Length: 241
Image 1 (cartoon, helix red, strand yellow):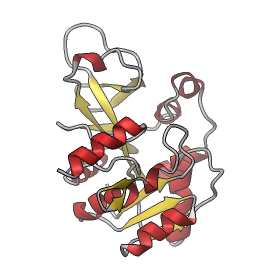
Image 2: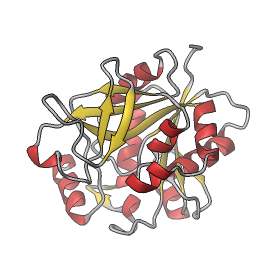
Image 3: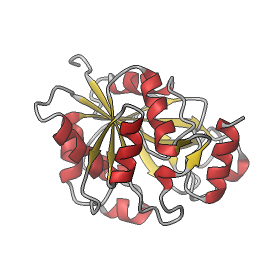
């Protein structure tokens, strides 16, 4: 493939149903979105911007020296928010790889991003993402834990909330961080939601149903996603030890 020129984009919005104003929730002495921004900066692989729907989030990022792009608060998904920010920040298309790092992963390990980029460098890859082997028994049947079914070569075959595949062998916990070839992200956001996507409530199925190849990097850690007040307390305990 051509040389990778990545741009990291962190989507963030205030209107989270289970945890209102989630990006601005304080963890130690900084809002959660700042912790995620710091993890992305520490990876040291690309410029980092935050794509947000509110001035308060933008102010939190610019206060620490970061770059924030205000986007339409009515956009339907984080992927759409990322794409809108990319078009504003990089109209000349200098960056050919777009990394979507979710804004609610304050414990994300920066060393995972280079592994994501390696997966995207495989032949025919349009998108890359991360998975980790499931080690906690209760996660197998938990629909909140998205499972990735992957081939022996590391290509994603399917994503689901069900306990699959059956039989002996590992199951993989999907980590919702993506690297897109810029052209693949442009195509993805232009597509209508697919039937499987609407059924499973997993937008990556739209990519698979439309022929986009998703490559997978297997890692050994699942970052804590903050969706509830209990998750927030866990993040505070982990980051403020």
